[in-house]
Length: 66
Image 1 (tube, rainbow, N blue to C red):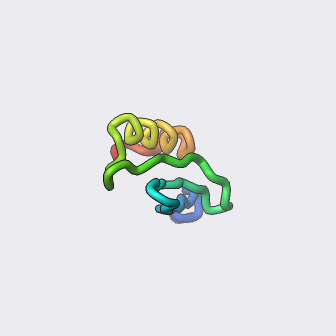
Image 2 (image 1 turned 90 degrees about the horizontal axis):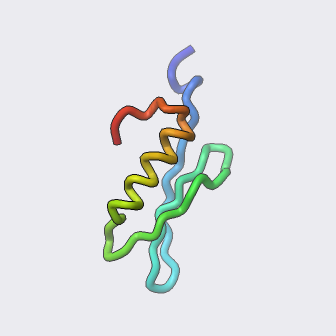
């Protein structure tokens, strides 16, 4: 079994509504893991830390470095 069969796939989507932009992380099954606001074309340091923690949980600690 290669790694693609064992590891879940994640989808990153960027969307914009009015003045707000968001980065949404979804599982390949279409389940939304979380959405983060993008401000002035950047993610805040807090959002980056939250993304890292959520990905580690979703991937069961298999993410070593982001």
